[in-house]
Image (cartoon, rainbow, N blue to C red):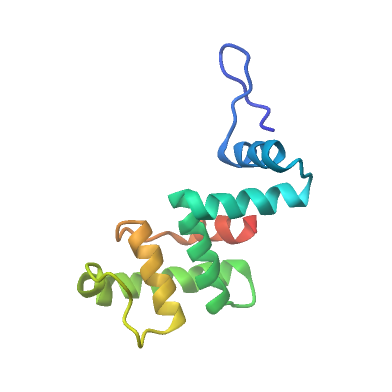
Length: 130
């Protein structure tokens, strides 16, 4: 749990500690099982969790020798997608049937960020958290 506290002295729960608390309450699980269960729940219900899942999936597709290099490459691919294809594809209900797996994940990230994209530092944080 977070060591930060509100003025009233109550603990301030951040997103990750809240997810772990939910996991403990719901399943009586502990440790790594808490984190996996909470991440799974967040990826299903929370838009930021869905975005993070899409980032992780895209990062696996462009994997480089380091997390930093992977994040830089993914940011570059995402910027290229947003500049070249997003404006044409943003209103489509589903991705093009011939789209590559990377393009599908880039589209998912773009939809979840309203076309804003994600910086390499955020991508690094998401990848490192896995």
